[in-house]
Image (cartoon, rainbow, N blue to C red; front, side, top):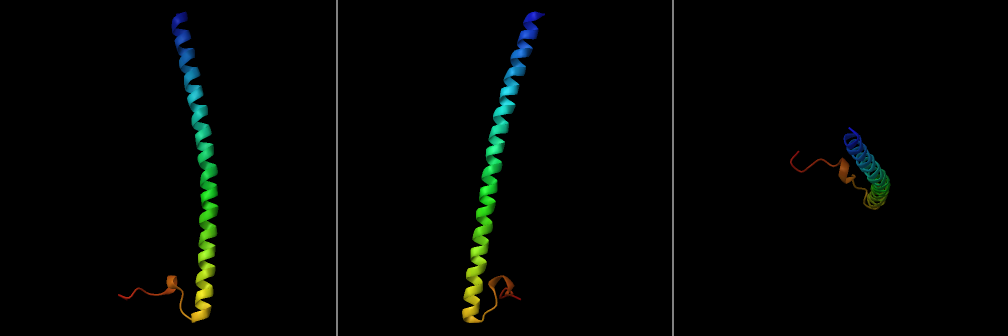
Length: 71
């Protein structure tokens, strides 16, 4: 019986360690997703500003508002 208890304790310790490792990985991925989300938002803002400046100079319709040629 004690051998079985020891084996179960070893399994619990292993699973606990694995859960902690996975938690660390997930936390790191969450931070990376946050950074990437901010970068994408920044790039979208820059592109919108660039497009707006280009339109002001040309008096054109923004590309996103133009209808495709087959319409």
